[in-house]
Length: 99
Picture 1: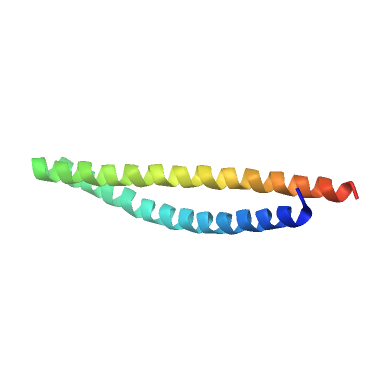
Picture 2: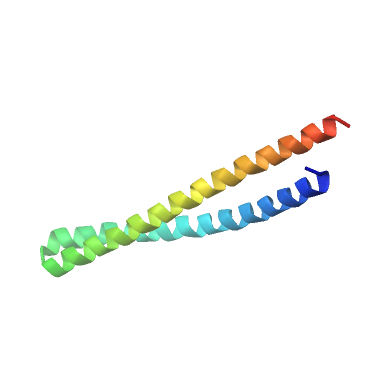
C-alpha cells in the first residue's frame, strides 16, 4: 500500500473516530438521564403499586436498556477503529523505517 493511500485511510479512520466519540459522549449523557428516569419510575411503581405505573417503570427500563446496548455498540466501534488506526500507524512506521 502506498504512503498516500495509508495517509488517506488514516485520515478517514480519524474522522470516523471523532464522529463516533462525539456520538458516544451524547449517548452516555442521554443514558445517564434515562437511567435516572428509570430509577425514579421504579420507585414510583413501588410506592403506587398500580399496574399503569408499573408498566411505565418497565417501559422506562426498556428504553434505558436499549440505549445501554447502543452505547456498548458505540464503544465496540470506537475500540475497533482505534485498533485499525494503530495498525495503519504501524504500517506507516514500518514503511518509513524501510526507506
